[in-house]
Length: 116
Image (cartoon, rainbow, N blue to C red; front, side, top):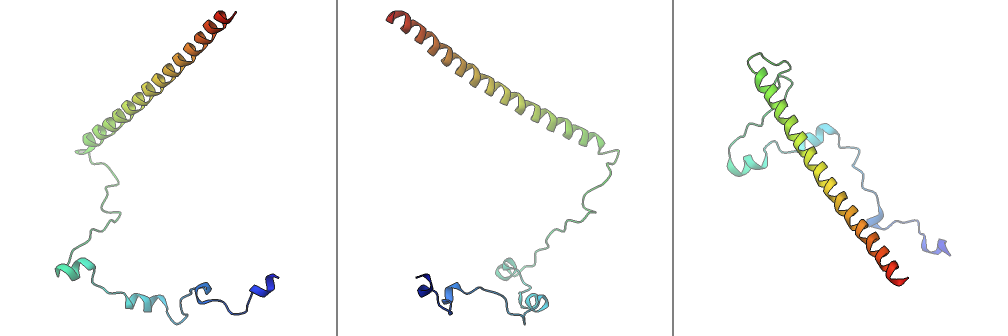
């Protein structure tokens, strides 16, 4: 029965979309406009920053070394405070749950004593 629904011609929506072989990367790059959207709206050219390996210093200069040490200490302090805050939060949750469980057990024992 399945072969009745199958046909040799695929509907247009089922056909795969593949780029034509005549288009190469160089022809695609040539068809892309060189002006950006902001340039075409404002008429001004905007210089985009380039991030090269020269932008970031690989070695720390002696004059900036104190600033980098202070940043590292500050980041470490912030992370340790966040960790301590999380610890206190989780301990409070566990104490709360332990108190509820303890109360339920106590109520159950009292109820059992009343029943007997």
